Length: 522
Ligand code: FAD
Ligand code: SF4
Image (cartoon, rainbow, N blue to C red; front, top):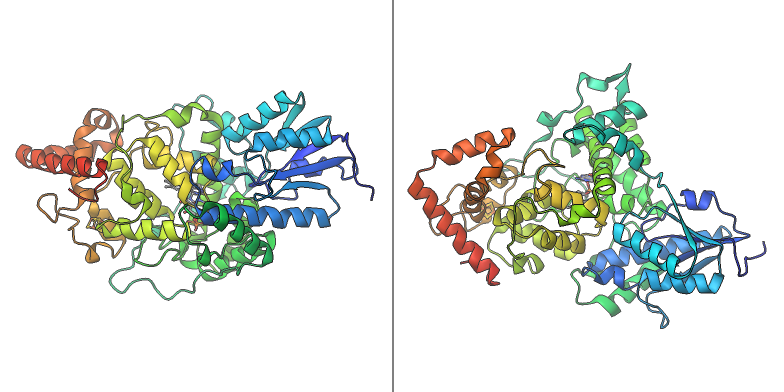
């Protein structure tokens, strides 16, 4: 087939998290007259200091995708990170690609991240080319679906959007009703492990780096060695083939107990019964329908119980679609929200894991090492501590965007600002996820190995979570007491003796001042 020559018809901009060959941008293109453009640029790893495994994953997956597309007959104009001419940013690289190919227009599937969309729009304006943005049909719901759902509602709640999508797509439905007679089985899905620890489970399937991945790892090590992460542990799925194998492995080995233990934590056990599929989904190596259908099939084949399957489906068809909707309709103002007026700096130990708090040292240590922590570690350990301490939401956001292999802003930001920090004042979550150390004690074995006591709120062994919890309630009392779902917690605050509360708040203040000064404890 004759290769296109400049001037071409369309330049197809393909971003690092758009690695699906069935995307609209490919469907509407012709390899004889259109050219695809992809670029690895330092800016995407440095606007926040991206975890080394995250950058290696993106680079490797992009290079594999480039090779597959070329093998399928497409011309892919591809810029590698370490090419001397690399301009360092997507906008600068796109401007050069437009100058090289002189396309009539540029097409792109709607970028997930607001910042990237603005950059591409500006580059096309600078070069006098129209940018055509195609809607992203990787998701179950379009942004217009979400807008329609949101229109006229006083409150947005994941649960209602989730039910709407289940009905529309007929997922776990029979005769217009949810299978099993209920929309959720949360009560059965809150198990912890007890003293004996997690039942035997195989480690998730890992993917040994091939030559392409090894090249990506070398490029990252040469450029970003000072970013968090240990590249010697890299074993993430980087191709569609790997991603489908990772899905099969989860369905066969971990899905049956996913629901029961989805909130549980255990020292040195990062994955437990979780899917480890978020990065593959976010890069679009895997389609959410594939993940949902595989789980539903396991239920019908009696290979997994309904609470586990519904719990997993809810994460993808519910939470994932919902947070995308929130980001899509609320940005860019959303990123600036700070309903609780939180203004503390992020403690320095978030970048080292060095703290006596066992729950945090475990969750932070594994995060910094492998770029993964499961949802409850993110929400109820690292997120909870930042919430109770009153860390400025933008600093919390920058940290979460840096340290996870699956970090992409459209999913990270609403989870961080909305769900974990309550910075949107309740748009996303109906109440702050505030709890004492007793929650962590119930859901893990961390406290048994810690120098603090989860129930103590005074003295040298007072658990900082518990101390900061009471201080958080007292500090934000006016805002919280207006929320009917916080009534009980505020009432409990009123039961505390005034002198005791004052002592707890003094201790909280000592923690805040010590951490703000870069120390690990008062
Ligand atoms: P599992 O627990 O096995 O869940 C299955 C799938 O459901 C995940 O792969 C994911 O695609 C989806 N999912 C689960 N929970 C959520 C959720 N709350 N929002 C959206 N999708 C969800 N997820 C990201 O993909 N990228 C992020 O940058 C990210 N940042 C987060 C920040 C905070 C503060 C919190 C509380 C959560 C964040 N999450 C993020 C959501 C969730 O924690 C991860 O998707 C999950 O831990 C990934 O691991 P897993 O694939 O083993 O997921
Ligand atoms: Fe974490 Fe407090 Fe438990 Fe220690 S006692 S592990 S700080 S919750």
